[in-house]
Amino acid sequence: MNTDSDIYKMTAKINAARKKMEVWNHAVKEQYVTDNFYCFSRGEFLVATTNTKDQQQITVPNTPFADGTRVCNIFYPDSDCQTVQGGNVDVTL
Image (tube, rainbow, N blue to C red; front, side, top):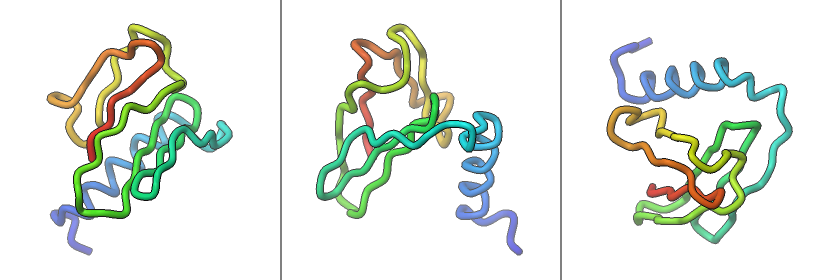
């Protein structure tokens, strides 16, 4: 197993975040769906995916976060953060 590979490091970050947030204790809530974008939450854990190589920029409404909450991308926690306003989170994939 190559623990230095990008996919290994990404998977490790995902698993660490899942464990920290105990996502298994929360129901899945579908947040936003298009042909090329799918977003769901489990508690205060928001997951956004795409099936295309084209950039997706979506404002996800009615997220589980209170206004004023600072949320960050687990892959870029120092540079990709925002403050929730109106329950919305802007996602770029």
